Amino acid sequence: MRLFFGIPVSEEVRAFYIETLKPQLEAEFIGKFVETENLHITMLFLGEVEKVDFLNEVKENLKAITHFQVTVGGYGYFGRPPRVLFMDVTRGIDDLTVVHDAICRSMKIRDTRFAPHVTLARIKKSPRDIDAVLELMPHKEFSWLVPSVVLYESKLTSKGPIYTVFEEIRLKA
Ligand code: 3AM
Image 1 (cartoon, helix red, strand yellow):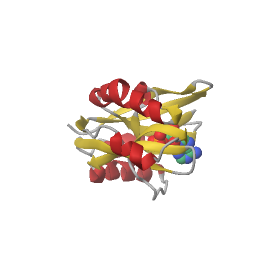
Image 2 (cartoon, rainbow, N blue to C red; image 1 turned 90 degrees about the vertical axis):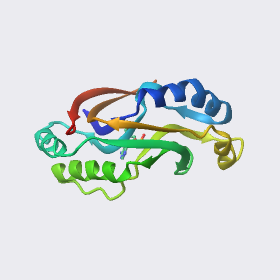
Image 3 (cartoon, helix red, strand yellow; image 1 turned 135 degrees about the horizontal axis):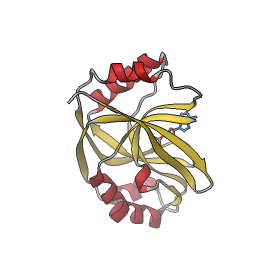
Image 4 (cartoon, rainbow, N blue to C red; image 1 turned 45 degrees about the horizontal axis):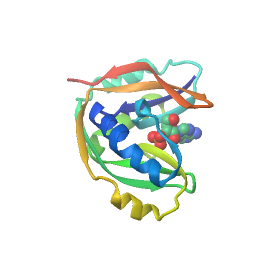
């Protein structure tokens, strides 16, 4: 199984993406756009895993963390082509880092590169300057309460990845 921990975005973000943002991005960039139902904030990518014997320890550590608000808004990108185009996390980063660190501690993994974001697309080509195009995109902020962390299974298919919920781990209410 290919697994990763993540936090799904709110329905409001999904609606904004499918109705407004994705059509505008598709008009500007050539690349692969994330399917609406796949939008999430990656907490930790695990890769191929045979046994989920780590899960009890992760649950134990996460249930001590109180649910919290995150806010996303604004855009950025990183990497060489294909560049990862993302919506930024503007508030809640400290809380997300606490969750990330708890997962890493439970799994005895060291990951110092945590930079929470919502991937929107992988851009292969941009006929115009990316920064100039992103300036034109609607700048809206969305906040929501994060009640749980999800362990996703990711199946890679020719049509793109399909994510299913392997386990939803509730935070403290
Ligand atoms: O949040 P994003 O979309 O950037 O890029 C993959 C995605 O992150 C990342 O895990 C998330 C769910 O697939 N990912 C995929 N393969 C990876 C790898 N080998 C990886 N992250 C690190 N190493």
